[in-house]
Length: 489
Image 1 (cartoon, rainbow, N blue to C red):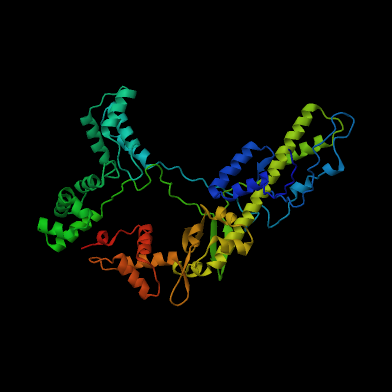
Image 2 (tube, rainbow, N blue to C red):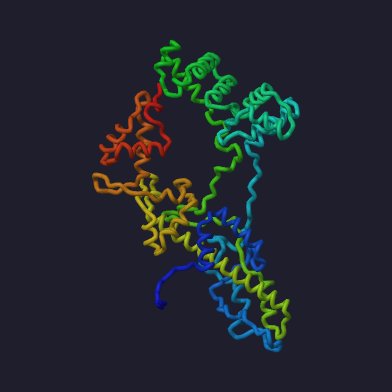
C-alpha cells in the first residue's frame, strides 16, 4: 500500500558567487596576483587599469534582460528592465569599496618592480661542474649527482644506482671508481661539503679544506674520524680522556668544529627564494597610531572594459538581430556577469581582510607596542564574534598570510594561541611560555644544562604551572635539544 508523506527541511547551499568569494579569500597576495592574471586571460570583459576607478554600487538590476523573442524579428530586442547606462559601470567616484590602492595619490607614479632573476644553488653547482677538466660522460654523471641532492645538500642516493641508470638509459659507461672520483670533486665545489653522504663526511670534507690553525684542524679531524659518536652525543669527558687533551685545548677544538656548516644546502638547493615571504599586510606606526594597509600594490587593478560594454549596449538596442548576434550578445552578457561578480568578490575580500587585521591589531595592541612577551591568548572565535563573521571565514583569512609590523614579520596564525592562568590570575599565551623556555635555555649553565623537570620548577617559581611533558613538547617545537645534547665545555 502506497502512502504519501510531506517533509519540510532546511538546507544551506552556496551560490557560485559565494564559492568564488571564499576561494579568493584564502589566497595570499602572490596567489591572488596570479588568479587575477588568469581571470584577465579568460574573460575579455575584464581589463587591467591603473588610472580609472569603477563603482559597482550604482548598478541597476538587469538580470531579466537575457530573454528576447525569437519568433518576431520586428520586436525590439530590449525592455525597460534591461536598460542600463555605461556610467553605472564607469563612474569615476571615490569609495571605500573601490579596488584601488589606499593612500595612493592619483599623481603618484605607478610602477611594478621587477624582481631580478636569480639562479638556484643547484644551477650554480652545475656551472662550477662545467669548469672542471672532465669528460663528457663524467659531466653527465656529475649533473645526475647534483640533481639527486636533497634540500640540505646531502647526496642520499646510491652511487651505483646512478651508474647503472646511465648505462641502461643513456648508454654511458662510467666505472664506480670514476663516479666516486667525480663525487669527491663535487664535494669540493662551493659550498664545500655539498654532496656528502652523511654529517660525519660533510664535516670531515670541510675541516680538511679549511684555513683554521693546523694543530686544531688536525685535532678536529681526529675527533670527527675516530670519536664521532662521542662528539655527536656530547660525551666530551670521554673524548678528553681518550685523546689526553687539556680542557682548554678540547674547548678550542670543539669551537672549530662548531663553526663548520652541517647543512651546506641550507634548505635552498632548488631556489634562493624558496623561503622568501611577501607580507599580505603592512602595519606602520605614525605618531601614536598604527595604520593597517593591504600590501597589494603589485596586484593588478581590474575593471569592466568600456569597449565591450558599448558592444553589449549596441546589440541590446537593435530592433532586428541575427542568430549569430544573439549568440555574441549572450556570450558577452555571461562574461559581463562573471566579471561583475569577480570584481565584487575582490572588493568584499579586501574589506573582510581589513576588518580581521584591524580586529587583531586592537586585541594584540600591547604585542605591537612592546613585543612577544605581551602576546595575549586569543582564538578564532574571539575575532569571529567581534566582527560578526563565521569562524571558517577567520580561518581562511589567517591561513598562509603574513603581516609586517615594527615587531617583524609574523604569520597571522602566530597571534592565535590558547591561554594559561598564572597564580596572579592573569592569562598568558602558550607562545609566551615558549619564549620563557627559550630564555631559560639560553641563560642556563652550559656545562650543566637544565632538564625539563628543572625548567618546570623554574616556571612554577614564577607562578606558571606547566607539566614536564608540556615543557618537552614546547622545547621540541622550539627545536631545542635535550639537556644532554646542549652540554658544552
